[in-house]
Amino acid sequence: MKLLFAGDFAPDAASGKLTPKTARKCLAALSPVLKRADFRILNLESVLIPDGVGEKIPKSGPNLRGVPEDISFLLEGGFDVAALANNHFGDFGDEGVRATLSLLKKHQILTVGGGENIEEAYRAVRLAADGLRVSLLSVCENEFGIAGKEKPGAAGFDLARLAGRIGEEKKVSDAVIVFFHGGNEQNPLPAPATVDRYRILTELGADAVIAGHTHCIQGYEIYKCKPIVYSMGNFYFPHRKGTMRKPWYYGYMCELEITKDGIVPTLHPYRFSEKGEEIRLFSGEERETLLRYIDTLSAPIGDRELLTKYFEGWCTTSGVAYADGVRYDHDYERGDLSFDDLCRLAPTKNLFGCESHAYLLRTLLSLEMENRFEEAVPYREKLAALEEIPI
Image 1: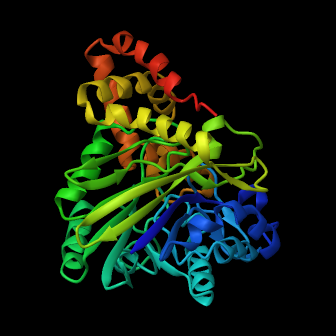
Image 2: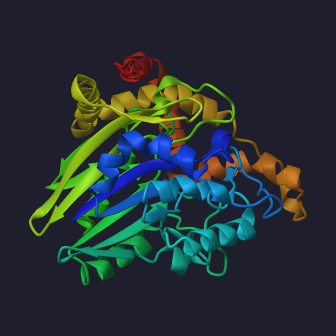
């Protein structure tokens, strides 16, 4: 069986322009890779709702939305499964979640990682082909729009719950794959805690972990014969703010060939245009150059001491920027907070609630408490060099 995973899809600046014709043209170069997979899965990083449906929730970061017509992109790409566990699925409240679920169901696109409640959000999608059965689970770090016992939303990471689901799916499938949405945005290397988390999931029975969220490419590893992809980067995300940093436009799809003997990954690197007119699949020498670059990003993952130094260097810039967002006012305790009040509180909530943000702050504070901040600074320059994509 061949499964093809794609990273973050958010129509954003291209929303409303993705007719079947424009979507087909955009995806044309990817068509051979898409067609040879038995199943295609992408992370739907946006609700798809008509005007007037749902209201923005208070949060830090943008509230992303597309329109129902943007579903053309998924249909033209032949995507079978939309992974919904991410920090934007709940951006327009319960109504936005339900409208998007209904739209996907109408077009017979399976969903994983989101639902009417936490139990539904944690339900696996079971795929079968060529005598093999695979269970797919999707979870995200605990930012905003997380499902609850009686609340629609995304499957927020809960190790005990996820471990239980992996164990249950191992009884009925040949392989269990976790699609994880998390990590530190813009960092070309995963944090040591992220590496630990994904490896633990394989120890618990996951046969592969495929991840995204960072808006840039990260590397991968084969850990005890199981592939872990740390971030595929954006798949299609033409940003409303215009031109973004160069890594924003690069990514790779991960093709998993699954047999009774194991799983073999193949990476397909690409670049999408700033306005979203096309996704260009790299081939020949350009493809080899990108694969060598991904190998360069992968190398530090296996060296814990080096990876820690790089992450500490990252903390001296991004950690400081995030720490500036910590605010608390006793007025928040009054219990009748307005939308604007909640938006002011949201960054602090996110810094402590999101696993990657909290780890970033803890590491920064440890550097400062141990008087090692200046010692970590040289690694931020080395890390910046790793962000330089060679094409």
